[in-house]
Image (cartoon, rainbow, N blue to C red; front, side, top):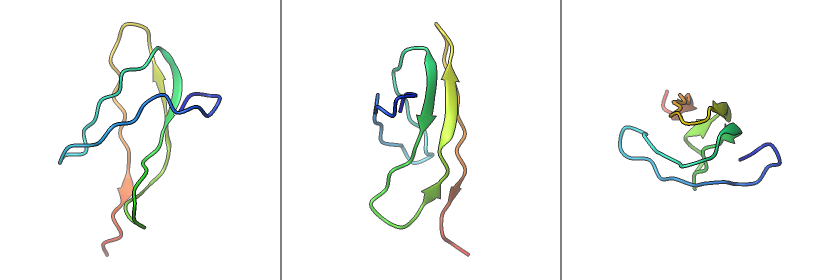
Length: 65
C-alpha cells in the first residue's frame, strides 16, 4: 500500500516466501493477507529508491509452539 492506503500490487509467494512486485520509487507498507488465522505477520515499511531493487524481510508467527 502507498501512503494514502491504496493497494498498488499483489503477489503470491513461492515455497521460500519470496515474491516480487513492480512499483515506482516511494514509501510503501507491505502486508501479508491470508485466509486463515495463521501465519500472522506484522506490516513492514519499505522505501523503494529510483532505479533499484529493494529487499524486505518479514517476520511471521506460524502459530506452531
